[in-house]
Image (cartoon, rainbow, N blue to C red; front, side, top):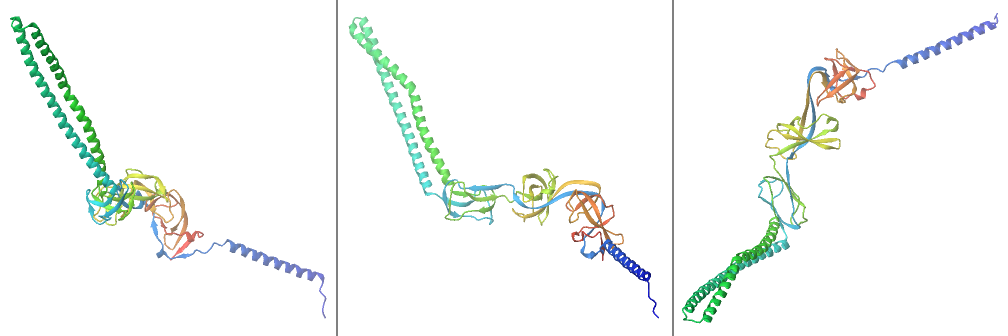
Length: 419
């Protein structure tokens, strides 16, 4: 027969259920918390695709590197001297070397050429006038000298006649009146001789003044002609220096205004390198530093001679003088790779420069375990940098091996496994 259960049994069953539910809830919560606290599994990375490097101690040369090109030390710009038209292009850019007197272009200006001819004829006319004036003045001078000589002769004769008449008068052989007349005539001729002598004394000055005035006219005409002749000569465009034509910017039939650049000539033997260095690397670059220029056909020593005061597109132009002759294949605009020596550091800890390594920063690098099976992320403080190496200030010691490749995809992992 069934025995009815009491309330005590039901109460115990309820308590048991509550305990079971509580235990289950605690177990689920604990499991959730434990799973949440688990670190993500370390990813596996193929070591063959990584770039490892070892931390070393010793000297390190600080360098900066930049791409650039060879440029002429001096470019000779040839401009049109006056408005004209291109009638012939004798030489083109880059064909053959040219001498300073070689013709590159021929321009034409009929009006200018006509003006030059007129100026030449005017000069010849003024020179003829000068020659004619010189002959005329010399002739006038001879006429005056002849007149003076004749007067002197007349005066001498009159003086002798007067002296004779005075002597005859003294001997009562001639009247006193006749003697006075001959004496007076002699005195008049004497005065005329004195005046004519004064005229002869200043005739040379008169001739000189008149000739100088005409010479001024001639020189003025000559200057006008020389100017026109020079302008006509400037229609024949010459190289100006020994070198190679870099550009010819005009074509036959083109009208050019005064000042228009017609061509550029440079000496290919006198070259310099112009490097483009990143702004971030320019802090320690200065004039006088040694450099090397790689032309892909030889290494040339150089020295920094100029730094552009302005940056463009994140780079600064640095001019490097070449201290040795460039190879025969070198030419303007040849692409080069330049390295500038900043300083030599002794007894420092350094490592090959990581992909993301910038000077004076702290970055995360994976340090490889001694057994090479894994790597842990460590914070590394970097110092001064060169092209290929960078100083290690803290976080690594000599002999440590680190991964220098770009590991940004593993930034969320403190550790990786290496295969």
